Length: 319
Image (cartoon, rainbow, N blue to C red):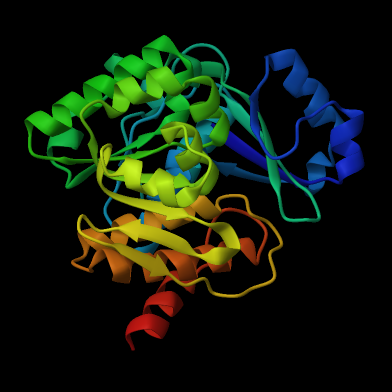
């Protein structure tokens, strides 16, 4: 989906009956209504979607990434493909394979307290299915990374399950992100079906961890997550992160910054972390890279690092 990133205040959310802090699926008319209400000329537009932000993050650090997606043959679809190519990420979609319909768009609204609220019109991406998976790309990868937002549609869940099966059959590790508390809250049964006997690596925040495990505290939740993932990273906002490396828990210290925009912080954490572990770093070292990268993201506007920032992060940690 194309992300349209803008700044609003709490009154804007109240006036437009938008639930703060969550991702809400909307139809095309509702999104047109909201886009008309924001300051569109001063908004940022990028190829997006949670998983796209993550693979672009890994690519910024020097990782080799492939992204399966679906966009339509319209202006936004062409923009999407140009932008993801500019970010050095290969994709299954080319100009000749653009689909019918309308390219999906996500309106990302950031309030002065740095919280991000999303209203998403899925568009063509709602039809993402098994036929859009590049199985050869999965087989040639070290990790398959699955976005939790796909859980909302039956064809999306089928694609998640098929991708996971292909990876497991070919010795490729499986990483999953829950993506948003609402995905676990409203699609918990379906998410547990995708997790199945477990994944190699799970990304979630503390709220998602508690919702998925049916607990009300993070200490109990992380113990129960051991049955769902060999390794996992629980992001804790300003308190850093907790990583389970298969044996013990590792506390990742936060880098203190003034938060301006939390949009993309979790996506960046996952991308930087995946880069770290695929480049031979320990999970603890990857956690430090991810924590510092996330701190850079929340201290500026938008979900991407600025040119040169990835190198600065690695130089700072390993000079």
